[in-house]
Amino acid sequence: MKTPIFAFILSLIMCLSARAQLKWEQTSVELHPAPTDKQAIGHFKYENTGKTPVHFKSVHASCGCTTAQSQKEEVPPGEKGEITATFNIGDRTGTQVKTVTVETDEATNQKTVLTLKAEIPQQLEITPNFVFWKQGDKPDTKTINVKVGKDFSVKHLKVTSSTPDFEAKVEEAGKGEFKIDVKPQDTSKVVASMLTIQPEDSQKVFYATARVTNAPQVQ
Amino acid sequence: MKSSLVAQAVILAALALLPAAGEAIYFRDKISWRSAIAPSEMVTVEQAREFGSTAIWVDARPDEDFAKDHVRGAILLNEDRWNELLPQFLAAWAPGKKTVVYCSSLSCNASREVARRLRKEAQLSDVFVLEGGWEAWLKKK
Image (tube, rainbow over all chains, first blue to last red; front, side, top):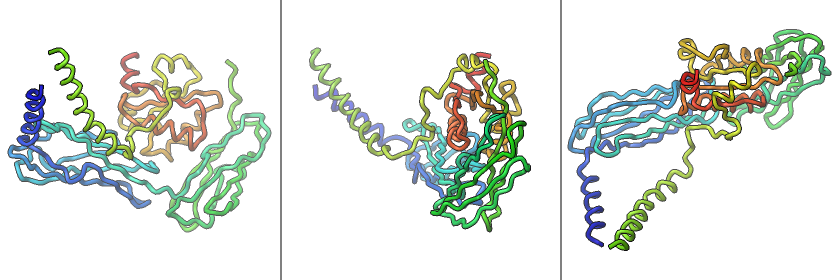
């Protein structure tokens, strides 16, 4: 019984030692872009430690927001290179995890998944960023909570409504938090307003929406 | 002979378990690139169609994909231009509406992220992710 198992393990070891191998310096990169950065770029370095050339068959990113490029199609033995992954941040916030799948013609390990993790700083967390009243509702005040991100300092907020149909008042709630009280002038007609929220001494502008909506249709 | 084969199979299975266990321990803190979503927040193409006129379709794909083709009446809302596109969606939304978000395929994550942000940031309810996304829609068109 011992012979087949021994043969299996031996063949496994031989296969592993004989392969052409792309050795990755790291398959996971963590990035901390600045608040004004538009992109986060990860570099995944590799070296061909095997005895035969390695060819890239495909380099494929997990989402349209990330592009990935290899410097070359063929990696001769002993040569080094890198895959560059560029993540377009757009209006994304918080922890973003994107992957790049690299496919090669190696005998084993044909697919390698590279992971790019980016922590996108968020200056203001606005919840909810949408307040609404149904037509005919009592025009009560609704509150939008604003929390300042941990790496930021905001002492004052300026809030303006794009139309006079809504009134918005800011109140400091302490510990880096604010409350914006929003009140429609009346709810008899369907109206909408864009609330512009701007921290003092900051170019960055945030938005919330206030609306008086149609009453829901009865099905 | 038979018991010997069984014993070998058990030993091989145990050997296979060793790297599997190692990988599970090594990757225990790794974050999945896909956002978690409750099964109740997923809908099939058939289920979404049953929503009829109460559904608002949201296309979470990049602008170029939306420009090529999209579900008829769908509103573009992706995270590339979230701040700019969100007001357009909110202008079309009304109480009682069901929001169906889709991205390109079964493996994409954009629809899950857009749905999560609509629930969390805009605090909307009845936000669903279309299973299989645009690819599934095309197959059952």
